[in-house]
Length: 156
Image 1 (cartoon, rainbow, N blue to C red):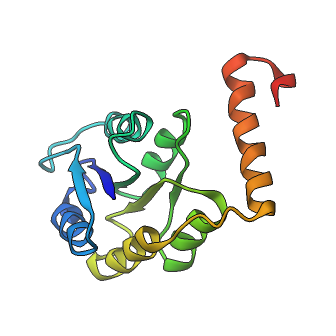
Image 2 (image 1 turned 60 degrees about the horizontal axis):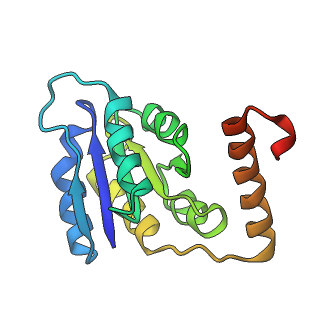
């Protein structure tokens, strides 16, 4: 699987850990920066990763900022992108299995490299189950997105 990866300046300290783990898990990372701790704006990084998923260049994404919150909010504003902040393994796999989440977000100031590795493994190894109850709920989420796109509350 191709994994779009992005970091802001606060997430940069975990960059090599993330890239190495994605490769160890047998996936191909696509690096969307940043390349230093020089301040940058996390929405720009989230947008690059989101576009890679929207355009089919990658199947999933991983975004790292200081807390994991900012990149999750920014990425989830994009059509078809479902980003979740996870700092433990249950959420990391459950969000894929039940909600078909395609972007894992976490904070380099919140978790260290070992736990980040466990969280990424759980996310990368998980698969959407497609069970009826999950598919029904995912369709309702997609309907909310369509309604926002059309500016028509009845589109849902």
